Length: 215
Image 1: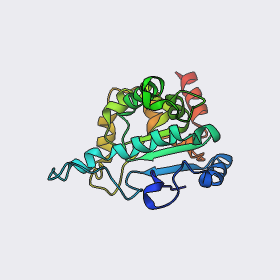
Image 2 (image 1 turned 180 degrees about the vertical axis):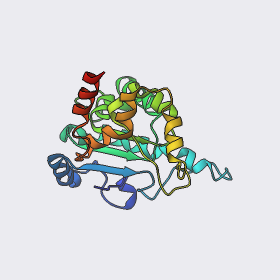
Image 3 (image 1 turned 30 degrees about the horizontal axis):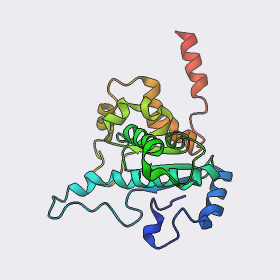
Image 4 (image 1 turned 30 degrees about the vertical axis):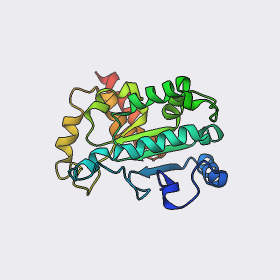
């Protein structure tokens, strides 16, 4: 299901209103992934005046960060602990710091006093409910364990100019150079199959076992 990463910017009730709870409940019950693409709120972070145009795509990950933090602190994920949220085109190399910052601010910042009290630490919700997508983020791939190997998925961003097409395979190889086979499989293929419950690679475990026995 496609959803806006910051739905309040579109003039609808934001996620802090319980109006969206029936939608979230239905997605949780059916295992439907709530997919959010940067810019789907029709508003991106405003760069400094007269800055280079390329600053806009450089800052676009901040929409994903803003949405993640908002979902974490809204209480939605306490009410719907099995809800699955996926973020596209935001990359993920920033996620380890974001997890650390959310936990620290929640535990120490005076602005957190009197706010909604969460059942878990903020980082718990990200690692339990959220998935990041990468296509040019070697840093995230190399540090996948800090984010969670099962939390990352590879995308190609076709047909945007930011994506690797038409050199997708060469780009993919360079992104995962030196990364172990299992981590590569999970990020490139396995996590998406599991998250979206796709009927693919059902015989992979058996094939691996046969290969191991034959060697």
